[in-house]
Length: 278
Image (cartoon, rainbow, N blue to C red; front, side):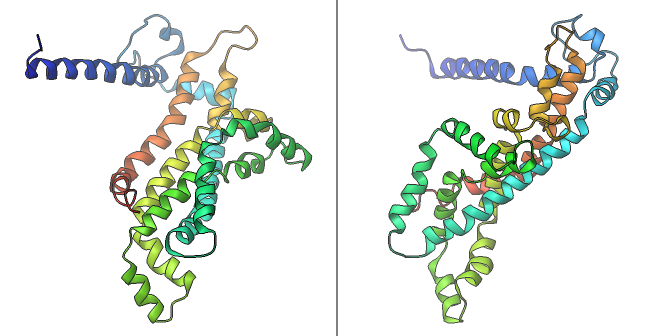
């Protein structure tokens, strides 16, 4: 016997609510632990509000490790990686979307095919190349190899540019505008929501790079927050300081969360249009 529609809907809502709580709880526990004295964290397994709220965990974390330098490194590397991806993907997307040249379809699908390539397979050869050019333990080793993975960005921008009205470009050509002028003055201003959306996605992806950062960054002062947090782990048998660890983890979450909240309107605007165009 089938359940009534209202009951099925109630069950679905209950299941979704339980999943939401399970998803949000680790974040809540991290926030409360970040502001709870370290010695009190283990005293109570579940805590929804910090007991004896304090900022001492941030002070202890900064005294033990250069977390503020890590924060700056994260902002720097993520910003440069994002800018690098935009520099490559925007002109490429425009070329594939608004220009005709021999082999453009083959080249486009070749670029799209790179999305199916497991990036982990490139780690060893890229690491060897970084060592041979003596770029190991530099910001460049973290930034440059992360930029060329732009298959999705090229595809997305190509679709966004193709969705623009051709009459705008035809009028610009009649006025004597060249390719670059059409690109900068017509195409780019009309896909700002798409640029903002992919910039946030790229920044968040670059911010969370962990494995590659652990391989090529050895100097403690050059690490990012994502890679530096591992320094709080119990490697020498000492007690793990959960308070400072959670405080540093909170620092790694807040910037990308704030960036997402600021740019969410652009992300929503950019999700629907363009992807269905042929």
